[in-house]
Length: 98
Length: 270
Ligand SMILES: Nc1ncnc2c1ncn2[C@@H]1O[C@H](COP(=O)(O)OP(=O)(O)OP(=O)(O)O)[C@@H](O)[C@H]1O
Ligand SMILES: [Mg+2]
Image 1 (tube, helix red, strand yellow):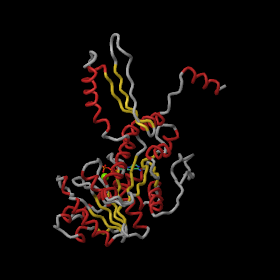
Image 2 (cartoon, rainbow over the protein chains, first blue to last red):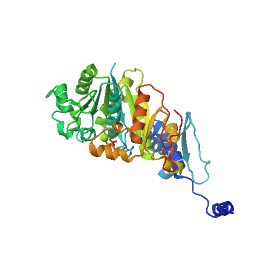
Image 3 (cartoon, rainbow over the protein chains, first blue to last red):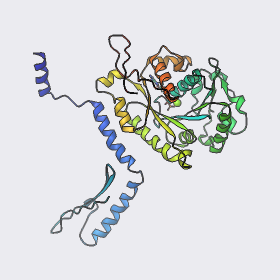
Image 4 (tube, rainbow over the protein chains, first blue to last red):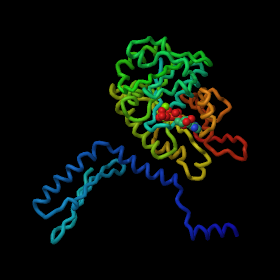
C-alpha cells in the first residue's frame, strides 16, 4: 500500500534529478570545452568580424546575423558558422572542419 | 633520492595546508626524514597548523635572500625527530619567491631529506606555479564540489605543461588525486559527487579519500597534524594515503556512510 502511494506521489511530483548527477554533467561539458585548448576561442571574434566583411560584400548583413562557435566532440572539433540571410538568398551555410 | 611533492589545488580553502601537514607527519612516522615548506608567502599558516608558530625566527625568503642559512630557519618538530618545518615569510612582496633562489634551497634540502613537501598557495599565479615547478610528484587536493573539480583540472594542465619536468621533456610529474572533506552520507543521498565521479572526470590516479571530520578542526586548534591523531577517521585516512604514496596497497576506507553508530569499514576499490 505504501509503495503504491509512493509511486502515485512520484507520478504527481516527479522526483528531481539528484544534484550530484547534475554537477557531474555540467563539469563534463565545461571541462571538455576548457581542455579543447584555451587559445582556440581567442580568434573567434576576429573570424566573425572578417566573415561579416566578406559576406557583406555580396548581401546585406548585420552583426547579429552571423554566429560562430567552436565545439568539441571526442577527438574532433567542430567549427560551426551560421549565417542568416534575409530575402531571396540561399539558406544558412554550414561549414565544418576536423 | 629525495622526492619533491607539491600539494596543490587551484581553489582556496580545500585542505592543502591540512594535507601538507598530515603527509609530512605521516611520512616522518614512517621513518622518512621529511621537511614541509610553506610556499604561501604573505599568508603564513603552516606554522600554526604544525604548532610551531612561536618558534619562527628566520623564514624561506630570508634563506632565499641569503640573510640566514638553512639550518637557522628549519624548525625541528618536538614530537618526531624526522620532521622539520620551513615557515614562509609574511612579506607582501609576492615576487619574493625567485625561481633561482627556490631551486638553490631545494637542492640544498635534497642533501638532507627524503621528502620535501611543498604547501602551495591557492590560485594559478606566481606562488602556486613556483610551488609546483620543481615537483617530482603532486597531490591534487580536491573537494567533491564543482568549482574545486574544475580548478583541479586547470592545475593538472599546468603540471603537464609548465612544470620543470614538462619544460625539460623529462618523465611527467607523478600526479595523484586526494579527495578531501568527503561526506559519505551526502554522497549516498545523491547530494555530493562520488569518488568515482571525480576520478572519472579528472582521470588521475586516486591516492586517497579523506572524510569530512571534526577531528581536523580539533587538530588545527591545538597545532597537531591530524595524522598524529590515530583515533580520528581523517588521521587514519591520511596515514593510508601516505602508505599508498610509499607504494603500498591499502583498501579505501571511509567511503561508505557509518551505520547505527558503529564504525563500519567497508571496502571500496583500491
Ligand atoms: N577533512 C576535513 N574535515 C573537516 N574540515 C576540514 C577537512 N580538511 C580541511 N578542513 C578545514 O578546511 C579549512 C581549510 O583548510 P586548509 O587551510 O588546509 O585549506 P587550504 O587549501 O590550505 O587553504 P588556502 O587555499 O587558504 O591555503 C580549515 O578550517 C580546515 O580545518
Ligand atoms: Mg593553505
